[in-house]
Amino acid sequence: MKGSTFIILFFFLFGGNSVHAQKSAETIQWLSFEQLNDSLSVKPKKVFVNFYADWCLYCKEMDRTTFQDSAVIKSLKENYYAVKMNVESKETIFFGNQIFSNKRIKKVNSVHEIALLLAGRKNKPFSLPAFVLFDENFQAQSRYFQFLDEVSLLKILQKE
Image (cartoon, rainbow, N blue to C red; front, side):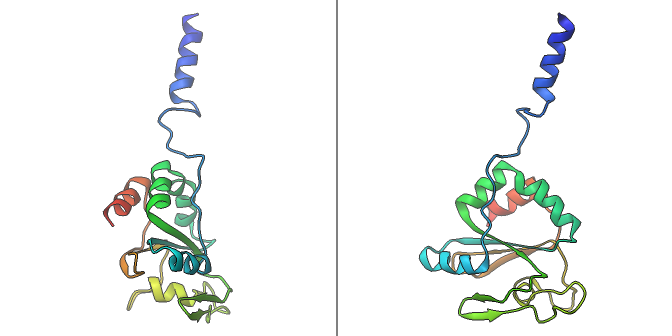
């Protein structure tokens, strides 16, 4: 009896439904730039932009961990419009009364024009993951070019 009680208690504390789990049933409602354009015209709000590529292992790891964290999801949902964009996209994007395209589409690891504009760095190659935070007036406040775990991203979101 003591053995089975211990097993049940162990499973409850450390099993899949642990009280320590941070994963949320909710998900981030990622917008496209076109949707962001509409949203900003209706209600100005801070913006978090996540640039990624399908080949980016750190991007995939953040999707699996950081962006599943309930506190991160809550902070983004309450305080930001969250935009996610594949930098290798072939789409033409209409944003802020301008048209953006991927002019380097025929090159290996091409980067869309809007990603280069918002997350490019002078004299450095474009790197991923890349995140840009904007204020309510869509003025860039900060840029990050690294893997961010839940704790690091939450500190950034709460600081901005």
